Length: 140
Image (tube, rainbow, N blue to C red; front, side, top):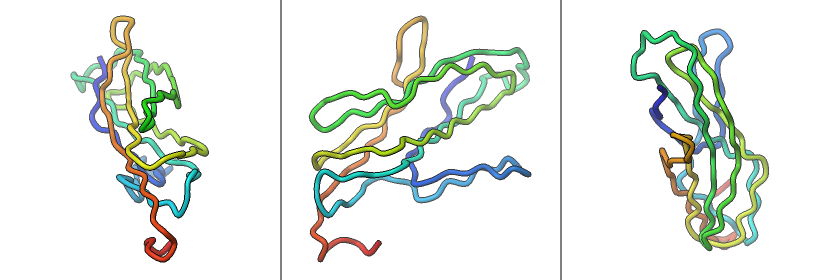
């Protein structure tokens, strides 16, 4: 059985082809916008899963879903994926594509796992959007 080890939102994440090392760039907790609606391209959602028994080499399947909840309570599914894996560890690197943030507030990104036919939330991360006039915004 696979379990979630960790989950993070970042500007980018890449895997080195030679070493299989994962590099995560600019972990996101909040974003500043000069005006709303604000468009953001390609937020990376990165998750690490592991088998409880690292010596387990039996092929196992699990399903995950990445979601976003807006400050007004709207729920969007960003990705749903079924995974079959023999290795003891597995990583997901998903990019959101363009996301529109229509209002200030906290947007919640969730990672759900399918358990006995029902989705169960395994992690939930906040991303706060704040409007800051151009004269007060952090430099790009």
